[in-house]
Length: 177
Image 1 (tube, helix red, strand yellow):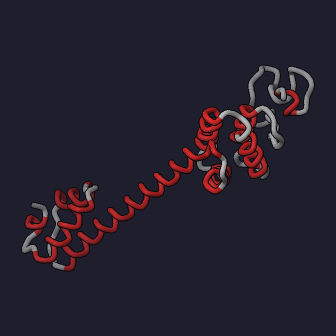
Image 2 (cartoon, helix red, strand yellow):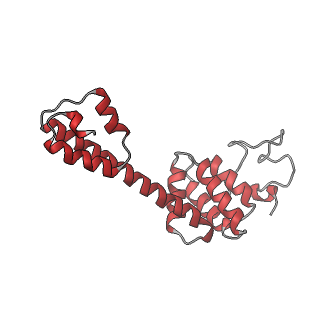
Image 3 (spheres, rainbow, N blue to C red):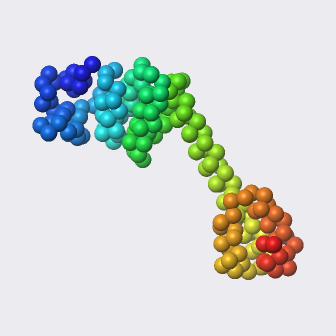
């Protein structure tokens, strides 16, 4: 389907392209029927804050399912990036995470990886708080250098060792050996 048919205009100087041939939100109509997939990606990004974004993204997801797998995967990732922190990105994430589109498997894996990284970061932060809590409960005073060691530590085994050492340490230096 041609660019002009997607927008519903027969001429090359349609409101989709404007007189300069460039696109913009006021010129690019939302794409809600299967058509030119590249234009559908652009329309989705352009209309990421519109009330029509859900139907635009559902159409785009179906359109991507009709092209080759590699191209669809690239365009799905481009869409995710282009929707940057909008309701559209939340909807796209949900569509890609809960549907069975083959091209979305790499996005689903990246969502899982993000989830693992977030859980790891949360666990490390809990461990850091535990180290501080035990040291504080013991009445020991941390130096700025000790606090930095705790803040910079990304090894759960080291943090566990520090918690155990903090239980019996006579002074903070005994903890961070």
